[in-house]
Image (cartoon, rainbow over all chains, first blue to last red; front, side, top):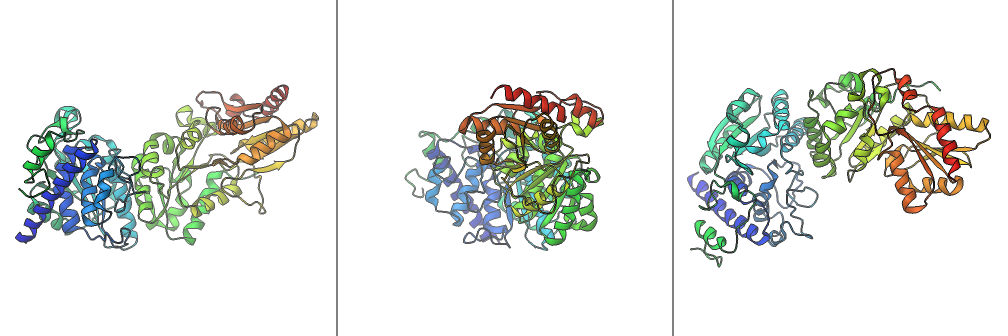
Length: 279
Length: 311
């Protein structure tokens, strides 16, 4: 298992490099939230979820809904790396003529299940998927990844209520709690704590972890599968901009991409030299 | 001309369709007794989801069910389905072109006593403006059943607007409904009434009154507001030279707006729009409200005489 965790750590590091390079190239997109969520996505795509990049609509697949859709670059680099579409497509992120829209769009991008990015809506769609899978006696699971700022949307709590009312133990909610949103600290803009207490009182089994501890993410997702009769909410404490020291914990890097000057420094932070070779 | 409420017809056909297709699932927001989804709920409890008084989540959940291969029908009152949950309808349903059917009851002023807060008079305009959305407003019970069946067979988002009260039956067993097609109910050469929902029956009465005065009015029923049947509108304008639209909805952006857009683009002709004149509804008995807001056959007769002056 330790070797597996080391592999996942390395995978997450490579994906961070892809995020930084992709966003530097596109000059538009959300850097901070992509870097905070990527360890979670790495564990989902490379460890936890059953999925088939050769057959994105395979009926037996687990589903991922990235409700915090502004972190689309994180999902796109993972999907490309898994082989859902050529890595070349990343160059067309947010460009007219490319399929990688600013926020995930199921119409054009293989591996994207629904359209997300208007915050607060993804968990409802995940609830619908979980209900449908249960009707079909499917053993597939649904993972919904939300931001902590997103928890300010009332619809999230409508959906949380429904998820426990319908006892959706095939649903795992993951909150990428990086503590920042566009206007600043979540706690100052509109406090959402105690997140764990809220999901607990809404009827979820709650697990709280360090969202950058790959081993802890693996364990939480494994443990979640054993919980019966209620959904699981994993509150993952993360750092916005994680991995690039000068992006970390800065709300100002919410929707800002690495500049030409910042790129080499960012890659250096990630153990990569600017020409693409290992340092 | 007696008949049933379109919501009752919905309840009946939904239960039938549930038996025919096990992918059909139904969601409601604590109004299943009023929207008539309760019949389906009783027959197929495992495929019925009461989402409580939480319309935004109901629409999003319906989108998720559709993404996993189900054919969800989500119902509540029109004001909540379209008003409260508009952005969920746009982002979670229309934008991904999800196979969700939003069937809203209690539209228009004939909601009656509940008053203006509960009378949706702008839902056609709002739904019509959303890309990928099909908008259907049936006139009576039989047409509602055919429209719901067609909506279930169509792959994509559909909004169906139904009413609370009994409405006259216009269509018999020979009627063939298809999405996007208007239907001529009465021949006429001096002007054309184009109606939708319960206003089509009012237009038929108005045409009868006009014939007594020697005016020959064509009557077209327009069950699909989007995509609208452009050809039947243009033929009517070409052949009769004047149009009166009739809807239990604001004159802004609904049937009258859609017809005017077609004619402006392709065959300019005088149009008089009958509907609510940019105002909210009120509490009252539904027949009193139809009179108060000028939605009676005599109002359509007056509109016809006015538009004839502009030919």
